[in-house]
Image (cartoon, rainbow, N blue to C red):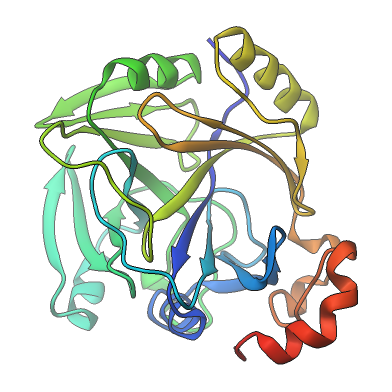
Length: 301
């Protein structure tokens, strides 16, 4: 078993409209935009980060908004939903503000289902889990999101994914219907729900689909050890890639989902102060010569 993974680091999805996504996360969900940069591999596309006050790992949702992208097809081989924790009793306030939202209970926890701007399946879960520094500038503090609670992985077959999650330090907690819940040590965005749905088609990427889910490790030394262990276990893992705000490695899972292992360091304060996080367009050095073009080309936020 691999040691060192502490839970979810961030989740990255694709969107069809940057402004609509930005409005949804900052005004509807009350998250802070902690970084406004570009897709390092396609700089004419934003990379937008939303999270708590400082972008603590375990709170961060990121988006690539491609204006011409088609709609996603839901199915297997993808992150089927993601969930944020809210304090007990908060769902009644959320339900009052989102009258079309539905409520249910799973694994003994009350949940509210929300739909994102591109059809994303979002959940709010009443839980004592709390990650990072709550950001409550646009919502009542009683409603504030308290970091990720969990993510749901939807696959056609359990075998390889169960083996991988156990290798990564996740232990099964129980099963309800088609879903088995796993948890890694600690209380920081530590839950994964594995949903086995062989009757569904294979998912196709598009607006509203998750590009990858990243798991957190403290630093590059732990990341290197995990990379070596994954390679020994037979996974095709990328070299370490510098993403400015963290270092990342990637590999494709048996269920078809792209996993990332990302470091907690150095964080989002490396190139701008906390007071103004997410306000200016930040570019990696190699794209700085494109600044004039990008500032004119990218839609204003």
